[in-house]
Image 1: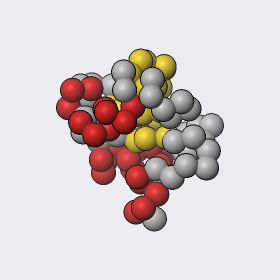
Image 2 (image 1 turned 180 degrees about the vertical axis):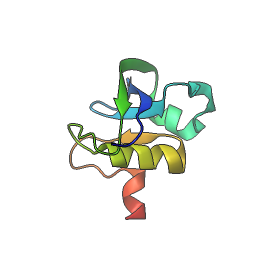
Image 3 (image 1 turned 90 degrees about the horizontal axis):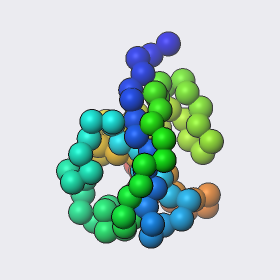
Image 4 (image 1 turned 90 degrees about the vertical axis):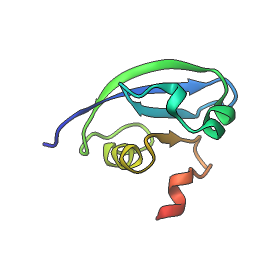
Amino acid sequence: MSTAVKVRVLAGKRKPDTYLFIESETEIENLPPELLLLLGELRDVITLDITREKQLARCSGGEVLEGLANAGYYLQMPPGERTRHDDHH
């Protein structure tokens, strides 16, 4: 089993059913301004320990960890909407 990463899950007021996953120690102010503008005011939803093997409702732990490694965050969009990470596959 791989090492767990503590991740905060946040929701924005502007985009229903859209969730932002960031490492627990990441400061919101350090996220890209365009991302913050898209989501609006953020609220904490839950803090999770994520491993590559963990399966979440709409994605895998591996997808979340890949987003964190590549972009510093993982953005989970509502079903049917593409994320910016989809363009890399």
